[in-house]
Length: 106
Image 1 (cartoon, helix red, strand yellow):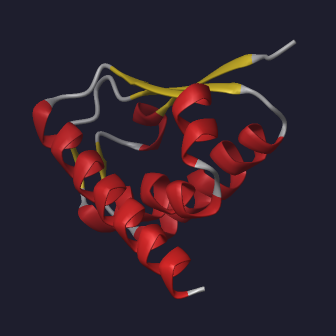
Image 2 (cartoon, helix red, strand yellow; image 1 turned 120 degrees about the vertical axis):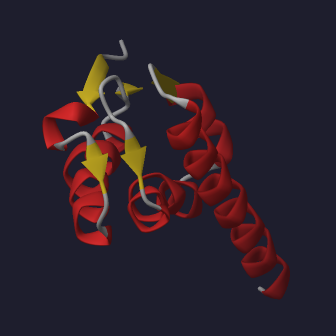
């Protein structure tokens, strides 16, 4: 049986800005739970803005380290505004391209 866990990003602030914070959330919350077969909901309610560096560390790197199908099947985003959504899309697309290039070079 798969457990569902919601990460409420507003507990970290309404403006999420640093790679350090993104890495902390990814390592302590996201990666650990994905490895334990949990479903993750990324609740971005009350988050006004995320920087590219935060989004890259928190979300983008997940797409480098885990299979795309696993991430798509086990994660979902909710309650985000258009600014937050655009940063997330940019870093996910960038990291998927990077992963593809790395695989081609192997």
